[in-house]
Picture 1 (cartoon, helix red, strand yellow):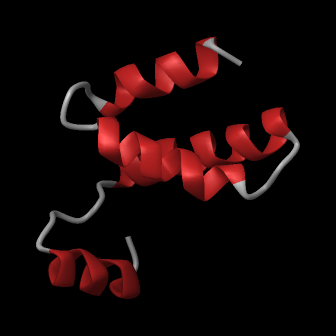
Picture 2: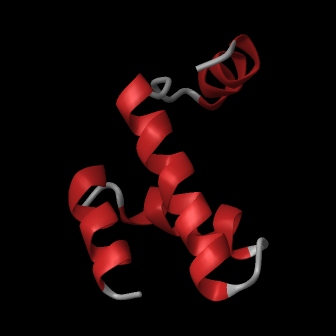
Length: 69
């Protein structure tokens, strides 16, 4: 995670992203953009993943996203 994101995470009072989380989120953002045909779905999907994170792990959520496309 770069310094800009680290600073934003600190300002929001949340932990930064691990390298694995960065990779997974970027993969899912790409999946959303390509599968839906709309690049704007990438950040919106990441927001939905953040909202759902308290209930399931990121790996579980990634499986749900990719299996329902």
